[in-house]
Image 1 (cartoon, rainbow, N blue to C red):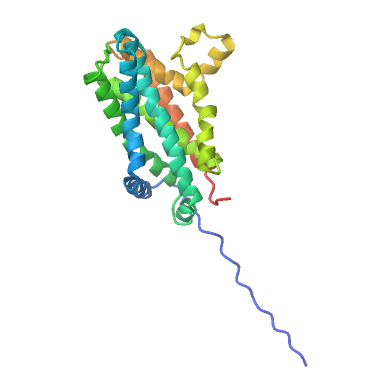
Image 2 (spheres, rainbow, N blue to C red):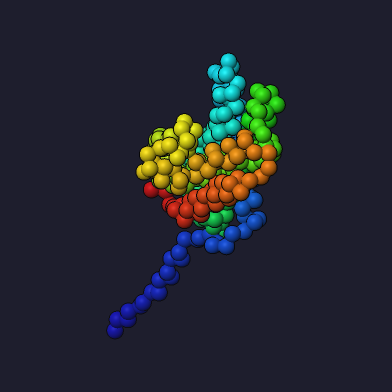
Length: 266
């Protein structure tokens, strides 16, 4: 008489996933880790902190014989330079974490996508504040940039612009498979905004279609906010609108970045 034995297979547990609730402790731990990684890369720190300073200094002496031109476009570029720099460095640094498998290992821990994105945004945001402070202080007190409004309002817009660049960099890094591809996103994401933001010509003088497109691009409101500080002594309604739009766009892009963050590296 033969007997059959049946074995019960224990189902393989699903892979661990992070919590969907944003945690301040996990976010701060992620930010601290990202900052430690940055301290081990002095070239990246140099790029983040010195390039906007070098560019704004170069611009000042390009227009050495025309101080009025520097005053008219210097404030706008004071916001654009940090945005571009933070976009480039953040997208490459985040992609490097992904391709090395670091992000996948982190997300296998009790760490949610929101914690990860918020932590990286907080870390790069701290660098953005230092970067904007250096560029703004140099422009106002060394290079002689003349603004009508408060220097602190100029700094506020510069910081928000840098944070927007950070958010955009985190977002596009989800769609790049290599650092080269991350750099290729710059012509698609940054250059159209640079051309349509009102830096070269007033937006209301553009073709109607281009003006309509410029009205939905966040860099347009970054430039508008800088121009409000440049020409008005007090906080205007347009300035408040511009600041809220730039900040809102940064938060929206960060949320999209968290939603599109993949747990596995393909």
